[in-house]
Structures are given as structure tokens and as C-alpha cells.
Image (cartoon, rainbow, N blue to C red; front, side):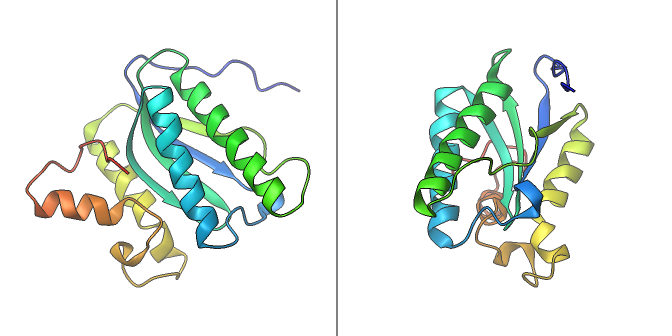
Length: 161
């Protein structure tokens, strides 16, 4: 059964989650993480998509972002997911689906909730006992956000990747 059309709010920021099919790992080494980040950068430019936070976990991804146009969210995630799946399947001699269903997205409509979501996303590796502090995890936006705060910039700026 189809999930139907995704409801998108104008100018909203979204917490996006996508998971590996059958809870499989989607990043098997550091090159995979780096390639995914490169693809995020490519598709955010291509589809005018702002990224405020992210965290790449071994079997799922969190992105907090804002599409600029009406179809920006779907086009950004479609391009990113297809591109990375092609890389993964070619590199590991696999075929078929990499992702479990379609991505989930939840609109963030209040600034206080945006701050909570950023903290939740960037502390994911701490809750998973992968690192002691969020800043120690290489595959999230936490270090860049820390650098911005240290340089007296706003917590809610778009990150540059």
C-alpha cells in the first residue's frame, strides 16, 4: 500500500531519518561516510537545500534541513539516496535496496524544538555508546557547530559541510 503524498509546510525545517534495509549497516568504512558527506554537499547545492545538522550512524542517517522550493525535500533525498545506493552496490558487489522504505520527515516549526532536535541528532553516537562526548564523533555536524559557537556565530546557522 502506498504511503501517499508527503505533506510539506512552506519554509519549514525538517528532521529527516533514513535507515538501512533490515537494519543493515550502510557505512562499512570511513570512505563510505566521506562519500555520503560529499553527496550531501552535492545534492544540497543542486536542490537549494539548507543543512542545519546531521549525524551519520552505521545503519541510519539523521539530517535537519530546509528545502527552499516546494519539491526540494523529496528531490534532495531522492538524489542523495539513489546516488549513495549506486556507490554502495557497486563497491560491495550488491544489488537491490539499501534503504528501509522511504525516508521519514517531521516538520520543525518552533525554534526551541529545532535546538532540541539538533542536540538529539548530534548526541546520537553518545547514546549508542560509540563516543564519550558528541564532539568526539567524526561523522556529525557537532564539531562544525562547536567551531561556530566558539567563533561567536549563531547555533542556528546553516552548516557548510
